[in-house]
Image 1 (cartoon, protein in one colour):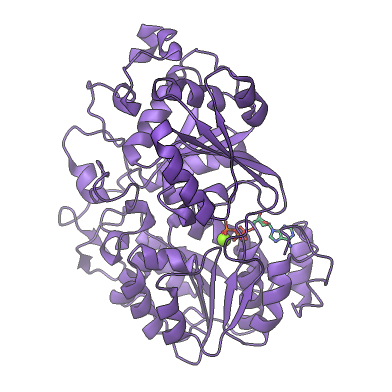
Image 2 (cartoon, rainbow, N blue to C red; image 1 turned 60 degrees about the horizontal axis):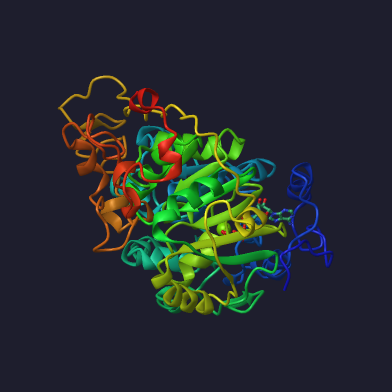
Length: 505
Ligand SMILES: Nc1ncnc2c1ncn2[C@@H]1O[C@H](COP(=O)(O)OP(=O)(O)OP(=O)(O)O)[C@@H](O)[C@H]1O
Ligand SMILES: [Mg+2]
């Protein structure tokens, strides 16, 4: 029941093939974590597995290693993958591919991701060459199947990662439709840190005599994670955020809406903190670049909607801040779980106004979390001690313009694209109508809750709006920062320092 490495067994003793064990060693992964010890032997034996392990406990390898071992030795036929990993977001798909792709190569297996917002042509070409392990979001995979470019008839092993989340997002029908196309005698592995809700429906319908491995009780907090509830006066909130963002060390700040993310990023830039902004309204290239810059340490602060809450792993994130409280206990756990991963320590801070304390504490209790409550203001000793907060430089950071989506050459037939083979299809390759939206409310489109969602329109409509910038603000209009947080623009002490000419640039 710990998050740290276990010395109970070695990967070889769990039954994994030698080339895979060697490939793990080359990546410095030598001892299996508890969830891996629990799940890998059953999965290798061909059992269906329901795996629940805390955030950062190593579930990707718990399902990924037996999957790779299970399909090794037989080559996939063109357009007919032999293993499928379904995930809710594009970023998570890329991450799973990064984790498993090189390991699969040690067994001669080829892995490919199939997600919206990226070139469909390349995905089709790869599928035609033969893909052993397909990592996919449901929408794009459905599109490719409808186009006749992929068949699931040869899939032997299927993984649903963040299974409950895909159900919560409304993907249940799409996922069910995909699972219906996979031979029923295939193996299924379902994983998440929280398994509840409609997952039961999937389990009853698609898993055969599954073995459940839950290495900690449903509401067990990660032991290496400290939780804090900071009660902040509304008028001081932006100053507190700015000082926390000015800390050393990697920080993820969760904000409820896309607009809120952009506004906070701009606001921080004005006071000298360069922060990456990640949400479903950005182009995929911008999303990928932002996450890469955060991973590489080029930016120390990532401001994100819940699109980054599930499964995303970045080394050494030492602080997670809920700038807006999480919508429910599950979202709290997953957001918080971006820190204190793989046995590391981490701190989670939730900023609340006085009138939000009671509801937030109730939600935290449901998450099984005991948070230390303190009233803080900018410059307070407690804020500095707990988060390492320090005043930002006050020297504005020039904004990073999001490049316009690149068109690759002229498009015959106007907005239509030409698919390999010569037929014109009605959907673009740039992710505008990539099927993630059609298939369900992907996490990419769930930034914010119904009724609170000011920018909740589908990606394709948002981008067509004349004169709108990718972030949603109108050129020449007042920046989102001026509207953010309900406080008076320029009222905060950091705004006061901002040299106007640079800020206008
Ligand atoms: N046996 C191991 N030894 C060392 N590091 C490991 C081991 N297993 C996994 N890791 C590392 O732990 C980190 C977290 O793993 P992973 O992303 O699979 O967690 P998770 O359980 O899927 O979390 P989440 O619920 O947030 O999706 C990754 O960086 C991974 O490489
Ligand atoms: Mg995961």
